Image (tube, rainbow, N blue to C red; front, side, top):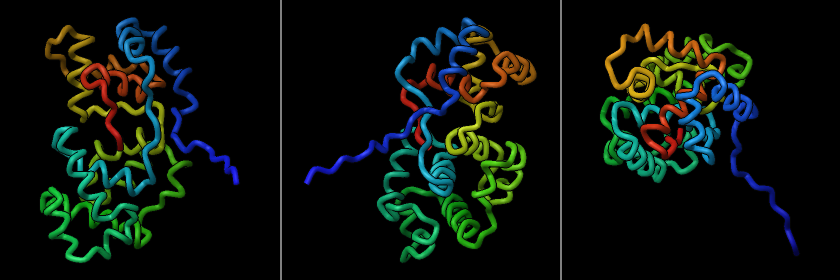
Length: 217
């Protein structure tokens, strides 16, 4: 019997091409970065809990280290559902053995409890503005503004997030827009105004200028 299957490969947000064209017109420097990376784009990566858990794992460690630890965590709970993580035998010890610090174990377990007990409302987030989503997420231990902004970019695919707490973004803006010189955060904020309403897209390509391999959240 012949069975036709549909591709489940995630695609770029519907606004991506429009945003790229607008940014190329608005800023030749960013435009050159965009043109240097023609076959890559932001794609959604998993359900809300998956994305937030992955962000917690990646806090304050390198991309390569984060991926290695995340692979080991996934081996413990391949579906990465809150209930699976909470019911894991010897959970804390096994998560620690996978490479999570004691603090990150606390954070990821607390996140799972928030989802399982209904303290978070992911079904409502699609209709909420960015700041309202951030306000809800930062009530969870281990989720600060940076993690919430990564969630807005990678999961909700919000087009105009400008994560000023992201060191990679700051480094890239200083490198490309200020000749590698130190620039006050206020100047970096003003630079971002040039990229509205597509600052998520600008940020993503600025990241690519430092690391051509996209981070997966």
